[in-house]
Length: 592
Image 1 (tube, rainbow, N blue to C red):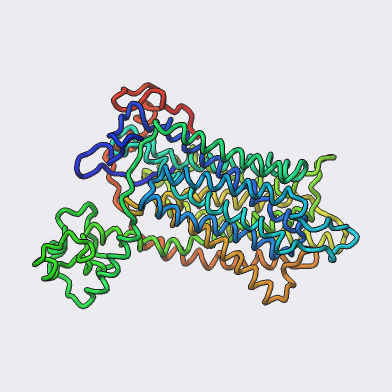
Image 2 (tube, rainbow, N blue to C red):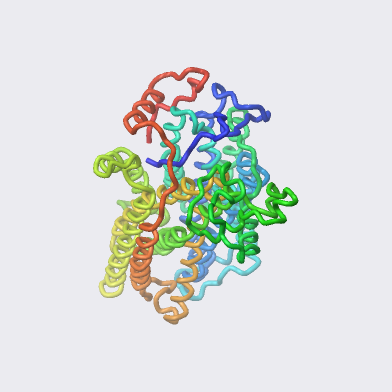
């Protein structure tokens, strides 16, 4: 279960500034709740189908059809995924600053649909591929030319732009459908992020089974065409539900606030701190309590003679408010944890690339049926779905009783468990790869590809902890007005993880003169690369422990007891709610 920080607005409003699609105050009996959130989750489901349907099987197309080197193919996939998650920062910026979350999702959803359509063309037009490689001429295949790769790259990075924009805003827009000041809706929102992640895993599961099979046995064009149609349908459903949503107006770019505070703190660096923090600008009206951490930033809120004499205390370019300074402190406080979350996604990226390539060198037959190599990611997502459900129904209740903590496991504890499992996953991958290579070389025998299941299963379990924990952490600990940007910050850990993977592959390839990572894995030493990631994971985990033990969570303002919360949530899910609070049709009766 994921708990997010919520609080009622200090001005006493009950809707948190939310409006309907006409710009009027929301009618809670007709908007929001699980009905609106459910339609939004459908958009994320489609985004996952597109992205996973492409990334999980792309390396086999690059190596097998375009005849690109193994290391280059792995880097193309990781760079694609890295760019996609990095562009979530752009989407988050636009959503917070100007467009709003709804418009951002709709616009970038259309861009994603165009990108997948281009990819369908790139993989369907015969002239976009080199001549078919005869197995007898192995090692002398003609690689795809730059012109043939141009349309493929254009498609992939258009998809990156579109899906990155969707990812930045869909979770924030979904959580906007619940009023944090309404106790019953607040309790329901507790489950939103787990259900959000369940949809991600469900879409991924469909992609690596149905779509990968279609790509390998029917045609790439058909597989990617279905993805394009799914995205078009998702955008249509999103637009069709416009009247059902609650909208939060964009409040301006949070990056501008951060930049102004940093500039003013630097300009006033020689000023002395006031004897009492109450003398700082807007101290007594601050929406965020003043803290003593990073006191150097407090200087941005010092009222100098110019600000007082010219009544410029409301000019943010002259002096910041305590609220603005504290929001910047919150963002900076996330950076140490952010840096230690990156390596998990470097490990995870191997499930998209080298683990799939391992499967191509193993026995994938079940009777007379040959399982597509990309479909072995099925075990990754089954593990994610399984552990997401176990965490909510078993792990969290047990942890609550042991720790007395409402959350059971804190967000950083979840992340820590995920990091440990990623290390174990790489150890398992290294052991299996060594056995696979030795059997292939010395006994001319291909072991079963089902020996890959442990590494997929363990890393999948790690993602069930790490993804939910990181998403909770970055949204919960960030300022209230920066939901989209904080989601983008979280997704940038994925981005950096994929880019780090590309960097490590390139370094390993160069330092070892290509002896570790070869097109024919039987001639390489991929297990050494996995061991290297395991060692890096151990070092990263100890750094994470140092940062996480020093982190102070943002205060939660939740007045009800745990027992009351669970009872209210159960009653809201199982019975009708008065129309002044929630439309009965919005009730959600199923739990992940």
